[in-house]
Image (tube, rainbow, N blue to C red; front, side, top):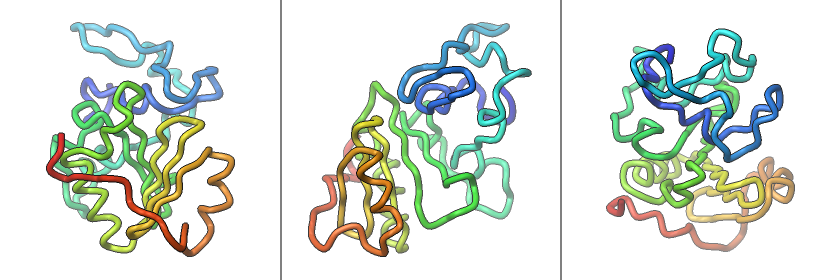
Length: 173
């Protein structure tokens, strides 16, 4: 693995990568044992451009001196959640991708605490549980639906006029 990813393969476990026919929410077919026994990308030198460009929020915080470093407990392979900004530019909506085997990991411990902090600062959070279950959070409001249903909602100033934030307990986990 390059950079500070070490044994973390979170992005390889959750994202769809069309160039290699990898569906959303399934481990990449190119993950495997590397020299020394670590798990990683077996096509790293020739990986698709979308894989080359992606940097998760945790890794970004480790690489850039101008931002506060996120703790190890928020590293994707530890928290079981990959977080990032859309294409690294827009900083109003945090995208959250729990590992397929941990769909509620975003509601626990350090991740829940971090999401509450983002919401308290006026940010939006979009949690992609699966291609058929997406949750959008803004303030104390929530929207649950499919990615297609949700696409039009993202551009609205408010997601709902009523609703409850799912139980995001910072002490759980």
